[in-house]
Image (cartoon, rainbow, N blue to C red; front, top):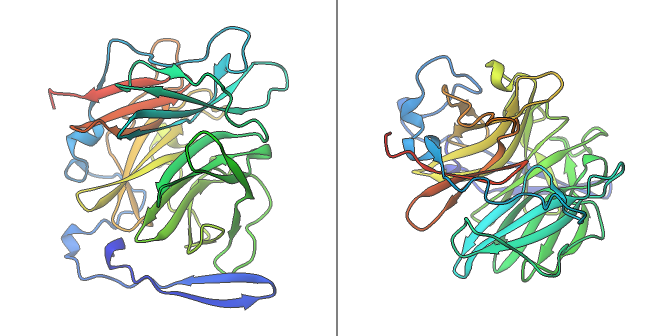
Length: 331
């Protein structure tokens, strides 16, 4: 079934003091031979599901284009996923910095660029230091920026801003099981937003052991579509020990998730991968994953996102340095 045919019916009933969202998914009439149904499977050739311009990239010569200062500053190092938006006035990057001390706090930084390659740090960084903020993801909705990020103990929280610089924190995300009860205690992080037809979708990981999907009518209370992951570990070795999502885009009527995975029990290396879905629930992984992996001594070519430069998609990887990849003209 396709999300476009998904009936936007939200029926609410009070359970104690909490609002339970019941989302009804109605099967569409799309031809079976066009429907993605092999959840998490890559047993055959999936190339027809993954256009070359979304999966085949080559690095630019200037890499890395952004990194920690390497000096005694609040952002001596940058941490895991940041996020980049291209708007009419140029490229904007939000990133997490830390000083490398024994007990560092993660703060939010901001940088801008005319071309997405040469970056200038904001003079008044960090722009948000009231609360631990890392692994950020943003959407711009009705003229306002919304950010979800990991906070203390890898618990996801939300912030909003009118200008992308001055942020207001709205507290930890309230995520419920299908039956309306709070999800089990523990970390829930690497949050990623998707907004479509005024409906809000949240993808998140729990201990990097799978990716879950929750939905909301008000971006305040989130209800799982199912209480099992929509993207699981494996079956390939490259993401058998950990997964976390970074971005969803919609392209030619399908949803593409850019996520990072690891084959290592100690999570020592991370790579970049892609999966596709018709409905945000049933996903098929690219059979040629990972699309980016270790470069020299940089073992974390991960946290991938796509940014459209006005003509084509670029791939950025943002852990632990920011690197840029252009579409491979040979494919």
